[in-house]
Image (cartoon, rainbow, N blue to C red; front, side, top):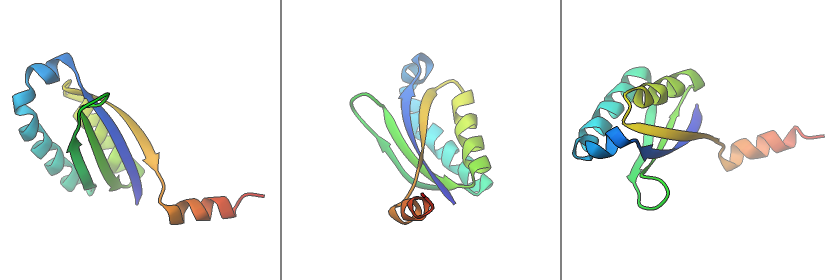
Length: 96
Protein backbone atom coordinates (compact mmCIF):
# COMPACT_ATOMS: atom_id res chain seq x y z
CA UNK A 1 0.00 0.00 0.00
CA UNK A 2 1.21 3.47 -0.88
CA UNK A 3 1.04 6.44 1.49
CA UNK A 4 -0.01 9.88 0.31
CA UNK A 5 0.10 13.18 2.19
CA UNK A 6 -2.29 15.83 0.86
CA UNK A 7 -1.84 19.49 1.71
CA UNK A 8 -5.25 21.05 1.30
CA UNK A 9 -6.58 24.57 0.88
CA UNK A 10 -10.21 25.63 0.85
CA UNK A 11 -11.40 27.20 -2.39
CA UNK A 12 -13.58 30.31 -2.26
CA UNK A 13 -16.59 27.98 -2.32
CA UNK A 14 -15.11 25.80 0.43
CA UNK A 15 -14.44 28.67 2.80
CA UNK A 16 -17.87 30.20 2.18
CA UNK A 17 -19.32 26.87 3.31
CA UNK A 18 -16.69 26.07 5.94
CA UNK A 19 -19.37 25.12 8.47
CA UNK A 20 -20.13 22.11 6.23
CA UNK A 21 -16.50 21.01 6.26
CA UNK A 22 -16.83 18.37 9.01
CA UNK A 23 -19.70 16.72 7.12
CA UNK A 24 -17.73 16.86 3.86
CA UNK A 25 -14.87 15.15 5.70
CA UNK A 26 -17.26 12.41 6.83
CA UNK A 27 -18.35 11.90 3.20
CA UNK A 28 -14.67 11.73 2.19
CA UNK A 29 -14.06 9.07 4.85
CA UNK A 30 -17.03 7.02 3.60
CA UNK A 31 -15.85 7.17 -0.01
CA UNK A 32 -12.31 6.25 1.00
CA UNK A 33 -13.57 3.24 2.95
CA UNK A 34 -15.72 2.14 0.00
CA UNK A 35 -12.67 2.29 -2.29
CA UNK A 36 -10.40 0.46 0.15
CA UNK A 37 -8.38 3.52 1.11
CA UNK A 38 -7.34 3.86 4.75
CA UNK A 39 -7.31 7.35 6.23
CA UNK A 40 -4.35 7.51 8.59
CA UNK A 41 -4.95 11.08 9.74
CA UNK A 42 -6.91 14.23 9.04
CA UNK A 43 -5.92 17.54 10.56
CA UNK A 44 -7.33 21.03 10.28
CA UNK A 45 -4.36 23.38 10.32
CA UNK A 46 -3.53 27.07 10.49
CA UNK A 47 -0.91 28.63 8.30
CA UNK A 48 -0.26 28.05 4.61
CA UNK A 49 -2.62 25.04 4.40
CA UNK A 50 -6.11 24.55 5.82
CA UNK A 51 -5.89 20.78 6.21
CA UNK A 52 -3.48 17.88 5.99
CA UNK A 53 -4.80 14.43 5.10
CA UNK A 54 -2.77 11.22 5.17
CA UNK A 55 -4.17 8.25 3.26
CA UNK A 56 -2.94 4.77 2.44
CA UNK A 57 -4.05 2.58 -0.43
CA UNK A 58 -3.31 1.54 -3.96
CA UNK A 59 -2.17 4.29 -6.31
CA UNK A 60 -5.42 4.03 -8.25
CA UNK A 61 -7.79 4.02 -5.26
CA UNK A 62 -6.01 6.84 -3.43
CA UNK A 63 -5.92 8.96 -6.58
CA UNK A 64 -9.61 8.29 -7.18
CA UNK A 65 -10.69 9.42 -3.72
CA UNK A 66 -8.48 12.52 -3.82
CA UNK A 67 -9.72 13.50 -7.29
CA UNK A 68 -13.32 12.93 -6.22
CA UNK A 69 -12.85 15.26 -3.27
CA UNK A 70 -11.30 17.94 -5.46
CA UNK A 71 -13.99 17.64 -8.11
CA UNK A 72 -16.62 18.93 -5.67
CA UNK A 73 -14.99 22.36 -5.78
CA UNK A 74 -14.48 22.92 -2.05
CA UNK A 75 -10.76 22.17 -1.82
CA UNK A 76 -7.56 22.16 -3.83
CA UNK A 77 -4.83 19.76 -2.89
CA UNK A 78 -1.15 19.24 -3.38
CA UNK A 79 -0.45 15.56 -2.87
CA UNK A 80 2.88 13.96 -2.06
CA UNK A 81 3.76 10.26 -2.34
CA UNK A 82 5.38 9.36 0.97
CA UNK A 83 7.82 6.56 1.75
CA UNK A 84 8.50 4.97 5.13
CA UNK A 85 12.07 4.56 6.34
CA UNK A 86 11.98 0.85 5.41
CA UNK A 87 10.64 1.65 1.94
CA UNK A 88 13.41 4.20 1.43
CA UNK A 89 16.07 1.74 2.60
CA UNK A 90 14.84 -0.71 -0.03
CA UNK A 91 14.92 1.97 -2.72
CA UNK A 92 18.39 3.15 -1.74
CA UNK A 93 19.72 -0.42 -1.66
CA UNK A 94 19.05 -0.64 -5.43
CA UNK A 95 21.31 2.30 -6.18
CA UNK A 96 24.55 1.50 -8.00
